[in-house]
Image (tube, rainbow, N blue to C red; front, side, top):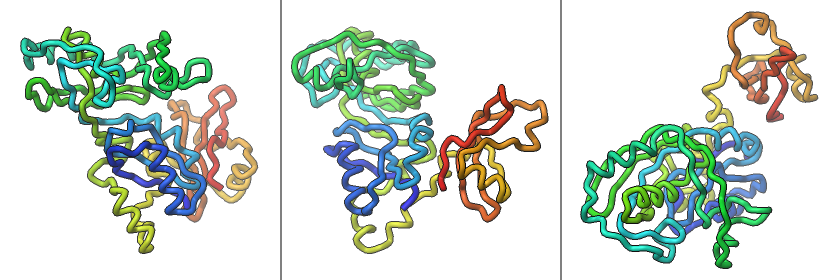
Amino acid sequence: MDGILNINKPAGKTSFGIVAMVKRLSGERRAGHAGTLDPDATGVLPVCLGRGTRIVEFLMDTTKAYRAEIELGIATDTYDSSGQITRRGDPSRTGRAKIEKTLQSFRGSIQQTPPMYSAVKHRGQPLYKLARAGIEVERKSRPVKIHRLEIVDWQTPVVTLEIECSKGTYIRSLAHDLGQELGCGAHLKNLIRTRCGVFNIEDAVPMSRLEDAFRNGYWEQYVYPVDIVLQDYNAVVVDDADEEAIKNGSPLVMEHDTDSSPKQKYCRAYALDGRFLCILQYVPDKGIWQPRKVML
C-alpha cells in the first residue's frame, strides 16, 4: 500500500495516535505523518503509507495554512487553552487597528522561539517532558517565514487569523508573542490546519469515514499517488538502462544537461511505462543526477 492519505484530524487525538490507527486499519506497518498537529488542533494531517514514507521530508518542507483563534487577555504556560494560566491582562483597549499594526512585525522572515511544551529536543530530551517536570530551559530562536497573516474576524477578546507559513512555525508561539507585543497576554484558543502543501481541508477525509472505508473495502479512493506532492519538480522519462542504473543507485548523465539553463535541485524520474521511479538530485560540480529517493 503506497501513497498518501489526506486526513482531517479530530480534536483530542495526537498525530501519532492517528498514524497508529491507520496502521491498524490498513495493515501497513510503514506509515508516518508529515507535520505534527497538537492534540487540540484539527485539520489536514497527511499520512504517508508504504513507499510514500520516503517523501515525508519533501511534504514537510511545503508551506502550511491555518485558521487560528487567539484569545487576548489570558496567557498560559502551554500557549494554548490546555495550559495553566500564567497571566491575565485587560484587552479592552486593544482594537482591530492596533492588532493589525502589531501583526506587521510578524510578517515575512522572523525569528521564533519554540514553546517549552513542544517536541523540540534539549540535550536529547523533548522540551515538553522537561516542562512537565517544572524545568524551563533557554531555547534558541530559529528562522521561520510567515507568507500571509490576515485578520478575518475580531470579536473582543478573540481575534481570528488566517496564516500561511513555512515549516517549523509554531502558531502557539505566534499567539503568545502577539499577546506580549500587545501588552495584555494571549493564548491560542482554537487551531485548524486548512492546508499542507497540495492537500486542502475541503478534500480531507474524517477518521470515521476512513474507518468505514477500510471496513467496507473502498479505502483506495482516498489514497493519493506518492508523486502528487512533487508536481513542482520537472519530470524526465528514462530508458531501461537508466532504470537499471537507478535501481543500483548509480548517477545519471542526461543529454539536455549540456545546456546552460539553471537546473532545479530535484526532478522526478519515470519509466517508459509511466511508473514513478525516484527523485533525482542534481550534483552541479559533477554535472550528474544522483538518485535521492528510489521507489523501486
